[in-house]
Image 1 (cartoon, rainbow, N blue to C red):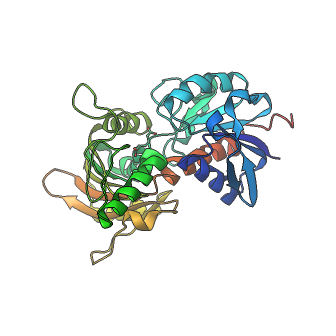
Image 2: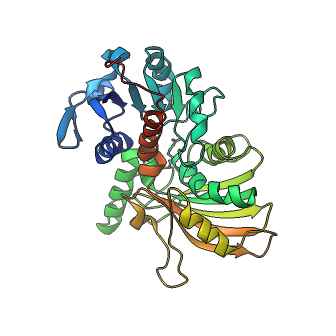
Length: 343
Ligand code: 11C
């Protein structure tokens, strides 16, 4: 039994990673179709040992396709996801277009798998923002144990979160510094090489950025609407891997040692927390890995029942492509999807 899968945005960072992960995890496919805008038609992408030629999304008929994995941004998703879903193809979308819609489940399989049944209202499932996905994987087991009251989060987000153009900009600016060339800025608002930028996505009326608001809204939707959340999102000159410093205030008592034990056993989590030089994870080491890594687990003596943790994950994998494939696996494992052509 295999599913016919279309990937929209197959030439992007996340689209390519989706193809890798489908192949790595031997997802049951009968056919994989790579789709993109007319600009990318004919581009070749790899799927296992096969090479796929990218086809035009505009001309593609979704009636025989079981699943569409979308990674082409919010504007394209808003236009195309309802049309694709209306053809009976389930859409798993990576953009922010549908995440806050009450009729669209926002899913991290380790956190709220049961919410997936809500997909039937629109035939669309949303994948969270990369910085939220890794955060809730680490927080869910702690919340279940001691009930989180308030979160103060600072993110250190890699340039791959801004796509291939973001990675190219860090590379080109770094090179320009070394060869004493002039530095040009296109993707980011200020120079990113040897710098950090406290600004990701658009500014909102209250002075927070949309990225900061997403962390708040998505954490509440997936974990618990009662949790108070505040966030500062920062872009750093790292190619892959988002890091987060998270201060957590709990309703009930929890020691650092208890938190360490809980996280060691939690799905999707890996604890690396030795009190010695190098006894923690950095984004460089998490690139290409599936886990959400947790280090620097400490009690915060300035509040009752407080902890500080350091959370790192590959933003292209758990933050995007891996989580999308895990959602597809959840649909299959719970028998919520059947191959249409076999029916
Ligand atoms: C970044 N987190 O690092 C963003 C990228 O809403 O899916 C993902 C944006 C989103 O720039």
